[in-house]
Length: 87
Image (tube, rainbow, N blue to C red; front, top):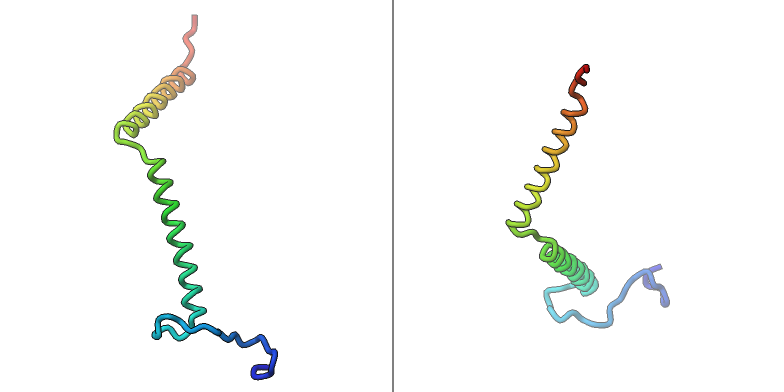
């Protein structure tokens, strides 16, 4: 029961927040922790994109390779489905 000595259902803070506009320092610290996690994740994403980004020449080379493979597959498919000549 709240108000009973030794009751831990009510959290009491022994320190006051540095900013007098903040009434509940626990919420401030929780939000600060969440923001640190978000900033860390954004930093990790930026590093990943920086290491996995393709240059324009690499992109064009990749598309040319895919096109060549598609054309080779198309030719092989045509040969396979073409009617066989009777000798």
